[in-house]
Length: 53
Image 1 (cartoon, rainbow, N blue to C red):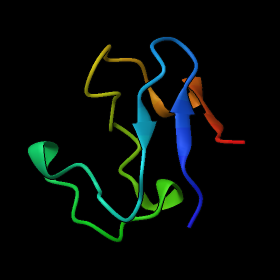
Image 2: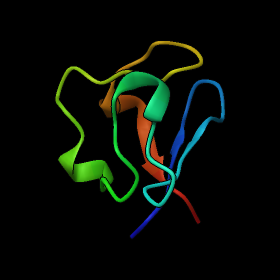
Image 3: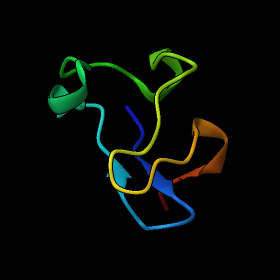
């Protein structure tokens, strides 16, 4: 699964780790995150993320 980076603050969403602090289980791909999920560091939406190189 691919990692995605927040274009605003640089937070990296790692699907293997998920986002347990916000109810996202490990193994959840970026594409399967809820549409209302936001960056846990700066609060921007999924549309502000890019695939990690």
